Amino acid sequence: MNVIWAIASVVLKEMIRRKDFYVLFVITALITLVMGSVNIFNDKSIAGYLKELCLLLIWICSLVIAISTTARQLYAEKENRTIFPLLAKPVSRAQLLLGKFLGCWIASGLALLLFYVFLAVIAGSREHHWPIGSYFTAFVLHWGALAVVVALALLGSIIFAAPSSNMTICFIVAMGIIWIEPHLNTVAVATKGVLGSLMYAIYFIVPRVDWAFSIRELLVFDNPLPGFAVSGGALLFYAGYTALVLTAAWLLFRRRALHT
Amino acid sequence: MHMQPILKIENLRVEYRSKEVGQDTKVALKDLNLSVFPGETFGFLGPNGAGKTTTMNVLLGFVNATSGDAYLFGQNVREPIARQRIGYLPELTYYYKFLTAEELLRFYARIFNIPKNEREKRIDTVLKLVELDHARTRQIKTYSKGMQQRVGLAQALINDPDLLIFDEPTSGLDPIGRMKVREIIQRLKNEGKTVFFSSHELGEVETICDRVGILYQGELKREGRVTDIVSEFNCDLEQAFLRIIGYTPGGATASTPLLHSQAA
Picture 1 (cartoon, rainbow over the protein chains, first blue to last red):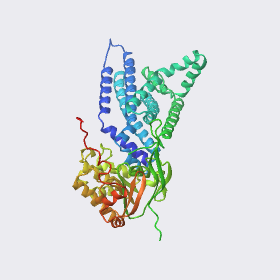
Picture 2 (picture 1 turned 45 degrees about the vertical axis):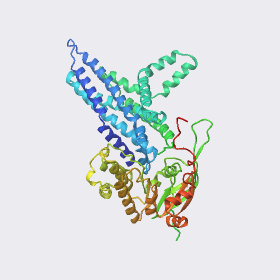
Picture 3 (picture 1 turned 120 degrees about the horizontal axis):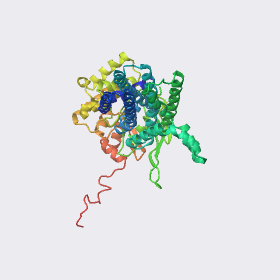
Picture 4 (picture 1 turned 90 degrees about the vertical axis):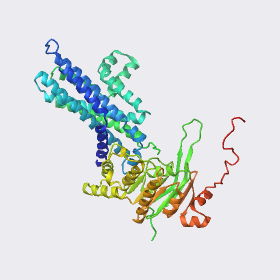
């Protein structure tokens, strides 16, 4: 475990010392701040819509951070050749993958926490009520969904030849899941034959990142959030899916030749 | 008493499958057998493309052998634990340049599970040994090439290894940098460490090494004590090396003009 934490801590240090994360955070913070202070005809419900836009922005930024941080990890290790002195030490490839995953996931979580705290402060100061529990549940589910995204990006970095193609494909897949997945079931029911079965298969195979995404709507309109059992079940699903994807990544990476 | 080898290679064969359709596989190593014993400095020699780096890649677990096996301290190199007591210095400096030397060494020390109190002492010792104590809090990206190579040496020594694997440790360094690295290797040798290193600097090998192995086109052409090889051929190691690999001065290129005349 010490080895995995050590690798994860280097990923975190790299992210802290890179400037692109701060740029993204400042842009999101500024947009949130500006939108949070908008006042149209003193309409009270406007705060809900602004919150929705801000949450959408947070989702997009968190996906960008998670995917871009993860997708380049193994490429950078190979391109800068830092993987060689690292694997020349008693480090297994499984530990390397887990360390990278953990580092990227924690880094994404830290960025996400900052975004949510910022949003809670802005929205709270506007609405004068502080649903901390709801924000916390939304944050935890969002972070859980990001674990799947980070694992997929890590798997992609073993499959695809370039980080840019990996990033693009991962982003399209994540966005596709968020927007198409909730409607896939309805379409599958209406479609007959092989295509319908195929759609059903996709519906059950793809990770349900959209569950966490849909929490957004509950938060916006101050509806009660799912209880402990439902949230816990979703988190267990994300954990299981993440483990599955990481196992696939390890199976592909464990015997792959690395040439100095 | 019969001494057990620290590094043992048995019938090691590595083939690379060609990516081009219809092309044969390339044999990088042909049934290599080699043993390195505790306390000796072993020079692994050969021209470019001979298979030295491939051998090191197998020893360090980067590449899998097609057949045969390699062992470090009796453990198969496929097991990460086999690398617990080794230090590896790559040919060029491949380190996280956003870290300081101190942070990099702390990271590698954590990988080796060195206890926290011992970790800091060990970092101090190796940084002093490679004369980088003054620059320990600077990011590696601000270092000169020689300094980066010395960070490399420091990371290779962080776990106080019993076996050091150096891949052309003085390549690309200026004379002073080369001398410093050579002094450190000599010092490690005097401390009884086993050193396995590849180099094209045959003068350096002749001075430092006890034994050498000469690899050519994936085959081990010769293995033995430096003094024995030098006295057998009655010349310096460089000349002996060229004769062993069958190089004839001017042979292949003598009849070919250096520049083709465009006018002709």
